[in-house]
Image 1 (spheres, rainbow, N blue to C red):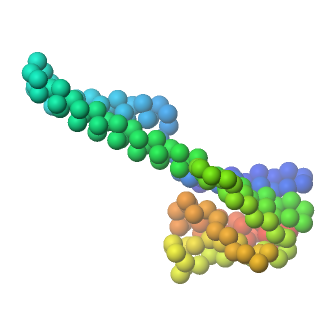
Image 2: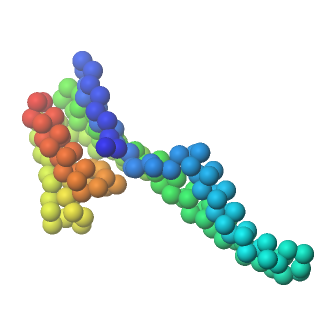
Length: 158
């Protein structure tokens, strides 16, 4: 599961992050193998002027793959932190770009909701302090359902 609970004597903290299956070493291997496979057709035209024309397309394709993976890696840096501390529940959503989005409420008045008819399957929200905020948008529907159960228990203990 791409989330972690931690507890201390004064607070309970839930940290969520998107799935991260591509390591830096895996990225290096993927780019290297992609470059090798894209370069294979160049072997047939080595020594002719055509190789320079094909090289432009080869480099453009490799650049596009690199950029797409780099953009995906930036999006994976999104995190959410839910902190239950005393008379306050605090949610901080840190997107890949831009300022952090925060929400605070009294945990006594916060309710956890899992809706099947939301924008996505198993739409997980917290409602309190006059607002409803989404939690774990990057999780799978099964993970959101599991997290709903764990959050319900955590808020019931408060």
